[in-house]
Image (cartoon, rainbow, N blue to C red; front, side, top):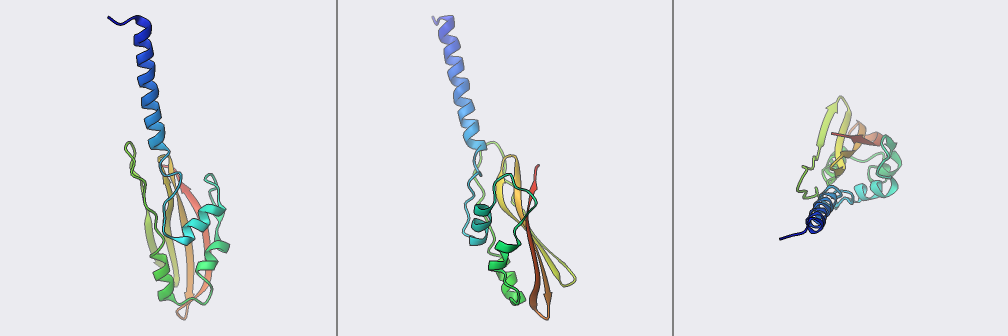
Length: 143
């Protein structure tokens, strides 16, 4: 019916096809889709393996000192990505905001892959309803 060599060749071809499909799926998320210019600028300035990178200079362009608190909260709401539609893994998108006294800490996913996430952590300190201090960094989470 089929020779031994032909069956080995068919098996190897099927294995290669499965590897190709899995590689394609796990590579999803490498190029983040976003409508947020802040996220685009941060991802352009950083490499995918940079964790703990200071992003204050980039964030200061979008959150200048003296910015009204309501306007800052509105701008925080625009930080988002479009998660990839993967077959074999589930994208994890974290968006959290916490107030501690006059300081607002926001954590937003800026990149998600099968092997971990990159998050933008923003610390905004307000006084008299205006932004007085800003700190931003890119952090990584590997799940």
